[in-house]
Image (cartoon, rainbow, N blue to C red; front, side):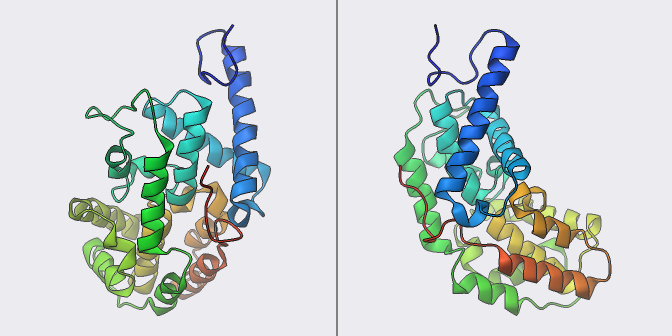
Length: 251
């Protein structure tokens, strides 16, 4: 008999495995609501579960199997985005803290302290909930015709803390993402810089994050660029801290 807490994705009948996954999803959502009440207080069960499931799939893609390791991964996912492993700014962190081997697969034993130290170090440097972030949003103002690389440079000048932790090798990949979004989402000028700042803060897929639905809605608004920029800025300023204390769980 396999213990419930041992292997979440254990071999066996698919209905049994699915029931185990659903139980984990509910437990993970309850964990998020308890440890990150600021972010998850107003999030519906459907959107919260969608976030948890996305993080679960991302963890599974690198080889995570136990419920305990998926919850560890979820802590980082709440801070960095459920798909942070594919983010040019953050993907290297899983390797740096000893979670991934040279082939990009998870080690059998995944220590929590190094990952939490990585999150803690990122918080100390970036201070995402602090006045620097608010000032950056309010100060975003740029002319039309910016390329992705130029928008990233403007964002760096406005909010250097947002790029301080990013490897130099990540800049071209991130600039390419901004360039693609410029055409795909019809962004330019201040809106493009604001989008870049949000990308630096919440991850390159922030518009698809179920816990940041207001940001996605604002980004998809098409009733004029000035209105969209204002709506997007207001939605960003309304995002609550991850927890009531602005901290994060240590255990």
